[in-house]
Length: 628
Image (cartoon, rainbow, N blue to C red):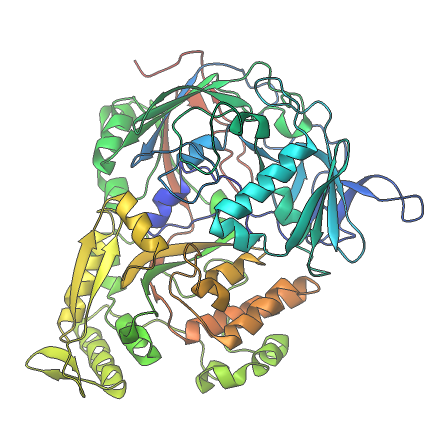
């Protein structure tokens, strides 16, 4: 599963844009016996859990002292200067309109349970001190901490939780879909909230609701405010930081709250160390990098291979004042499908032979040689880089699952592993272009006067690739040129982020470049990525418009897998089916993350197994530290 809370924007969206691995760390599906118990028995009453996991038990038992990767003696105070690409026009954390400062707000708002970056499939009590659920998982009850309060001192109440959930599903179509199996939520005690589900034995549902953000009802309903509108007024939350100042669209300054209610919780020991965190927004990525070079930004997550290979010879690096690393940690529990996504709502892309032909015109090997400095690998799975990627040809349980939907699949799914076309030589390029032309011909097209046209109508095959920034232009333009060699005219169009988001939400595009982060515990989010219902809903992440009964069946198999072996087999089957329909022209990724940071900030000796722990568990070398 994935967590629907506010995800820090600092690293991952930038990496997606460049084809790096992307991740919203998952807590996994929940299995009733696999939890950290705190009180109660089956006979005496409910069993309360402070940690919940998919397989086995959470890494940390009830009453643990702190996460292993933190420095419990990390000093508090000092400053952290960060950069963000683009701009923002709202601080509303749930509304599906505007350009939100979402990553920034992750430090302000909190969920009921939180994740640890060294336990990829578990989550731990935060605002809620524990959760209980019946054997059939038809509901989940969260017991709130009595001392939890918002930054203005107002206690966090069950009413806040109920109101937050109802507003999230009312105002955000994506949240409505994600929480679609929650049929009701109610206050069930002075400090308890119960979520009721419309289906039983969906082991992921308690974890999903545990990750919802809890907002202060009293603040949003006072002084003429409305959670249904965008706002640039600084909201309050229950998190470790408050918003100190705002320069609309340009800068946000956070201050660590000295009265933060949860500062002594085990999940927070050694975390939230910086006294001040400043986010400055840049419309140009190159200008943003210059700000890092000059010391105005403390941390940099690289997303351009050429820059990483050629532009780090400046004095601060040579003098050792900047540390450069490539770290695999954030990629260990994540996979990704990323690439060019045709909109199947357009008639021109409905034929899978056309979509396959497009892949025969993507010359990854030349791109990797000329502009990527050999740093990337071609993506060949929707779960690329993880054990969930379908291997070889289907066998055993995976084959049995695929047999249930065989009428919806190409026959060669059972006999041939998926492979991308390979270039690397002039001869290979000619062969791939010939194959592309043959596939277009089979789909009813032919070349006339150097233009690919519909053989019956004579209409040219032409489309637009819509981009939300210039980074991918260097990839999209060679792709368009290769397609031009077989008579397909492609217009590459870059628009500002706001226009891009609006067109994405309304499905007003021919093709985009995007990706889907995957975890080691896929679940309900797969329906939002690939399900038929999501294809009809604006705002879903089924950008391609996939609507296939076989895919829907395989998604259900993943969601209701009874154990890890079944989950792996079901995910392999889903992966193979998605690949067989050529819904995406896969691009590239890498299995490590290039980062650079000034030595005015420090990190734990050992990074968490599945992340950077940044910025939560890092700290300032000294108060007010900045490069001299």
